[in-house]
Image (cartoon, rainbow, N blue to C red; front, top):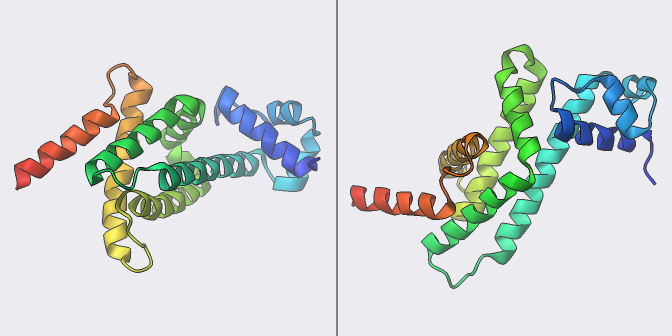
Length: 192
């Protein structure tokens, strides 16, 4: 059984999914967690600090589960392009499961000029995600090849964000993993 701090985090995560970042009130979190309003201040200092931590935990959980799925499940006998397509299919599959979480991130991006603390945390998260994406998709060790990991990871991060934006707007016409893979083939053949 968790304590009040853990209950508040769980409640905040639920509120992020149900109401989003800017529409969630401290009372919403207190009700969702079964903890008093005073508990938010005691454990986190503010509603924003609690929501920030809940969002970062949620995104870390997504990243960890995706990394496990991609590293452990891709066919080692498949060609690099087949593995690329399979990996992007798994990424895109998470969009439906985590739609509220992704929508919340875009909501925050729209308000980022008014959330300086969030900007710092998201920027740090993006930098770390780039390195993780380079490791997952290109099997690059970020410690051994930091610049190569940064550049390729930035590309994968741009793809992820762009695919996600298209999917949130219109999932029926957003690029599939097969579309992304075909685009890569076309780019490779155009530069050859």
